[in-house]
Length: 71
Image (cartoon, rainbow, N blue to C red; front, side, top):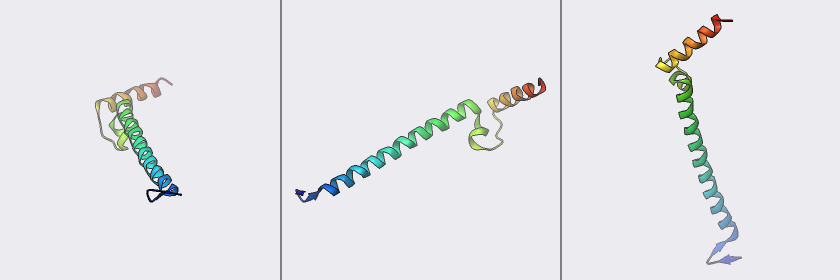
């Protein structure tokens, strides 16, 4: 059935495309929240996977070494 030359399938396709774009935006925002939280909690080296030394990295390393020594 056509209303103004637009079929029901075309309407569904447009709704699907808009939904997918919205879902991609939501996932991207959740990913950036996760990255920010990872940087705050574990320091830059855990986030990047590199050996960048930040103050928080050094503190975490010091605590973990002290914990290993206490075992």
